[in-house]
Length: 54
Image (cartoon, rainbow, N blue to C red; front, side, top):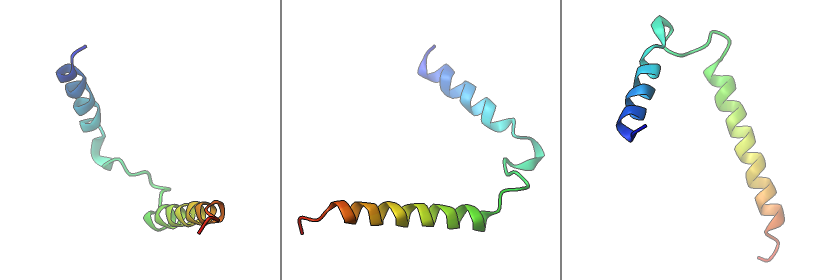
C-alpha cells in the first residue's frame, strides 16, 4: 500500500459519516471539555508533585 492509497482510503472512510456529522447524541461538548480539563489539571498536579527539585 502506498501513502496515496492509504490517504485515499482514510478520506473515504471519513466522508462516510452520514448525516449525523460524526457526533453521537449522548456526547455533550461541555462534559467532554470538562473531563479533558480535569484530566489535564490532574496531570499537571502529578507532574508538579514529582518535580520537587525546585
